[in-house]
Length: 95
Image 1 (cartoon, one colour):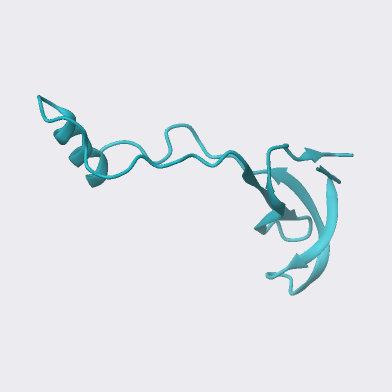
Image 2 (cartoon, one colour):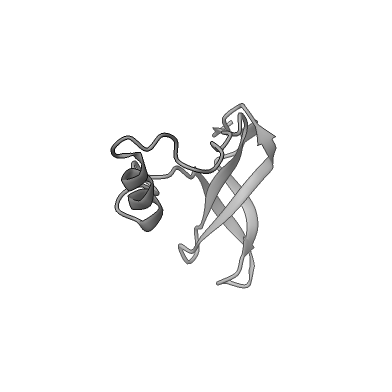
């Protein structure tokens, strides 16, 4: 899906429509892992001769929703927006 570099969108901070620059949102590395309670519990059950951890394995979705960050040129406020529905193709910015 092709998206322009700049669009006219509503800014809740300015309370009006202004020009926004578009940037693709991406999660940082290692998001959601570490020493949280669910992960510690799973590692504790997996250690030793205990077999499988209870619960079904989660199915990964093939297609994703493309999240973008809209940054207001006037005030610099950033708003998240999802373009379109679930798609396998990545967004092309700057066309």
